[in-house]
Image (cartoon, rainbow, N blue to C red; front, side, top):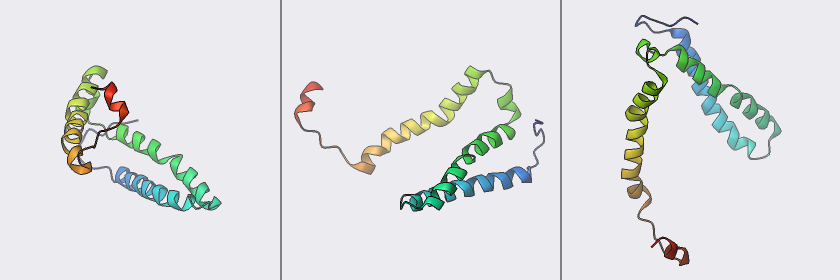
Length: 114
């Protein structure tokens, strides 16, 4: 596989990403119909879920930046953790109580935690 060194976009990759995203949408849509015990929907569901996530992984590796290719595995995961996962965890913990309200804790099991 050849890595794209230039800055130009690969239009066939964009088209493939569109089809993968459309597959995700269609898969979630057809899942609701499958829940109504429709055997045709179940076939479409299995077909879409057999390839769409694999396609995302392949496309992500295909359009990887050159700077990502030079990292060691530990440095790569550390950089990804602090740039993507750490902000998610922080914001999730900060805003979750506002979204669901404060939990009402009571019951006999509470005595085990106090």
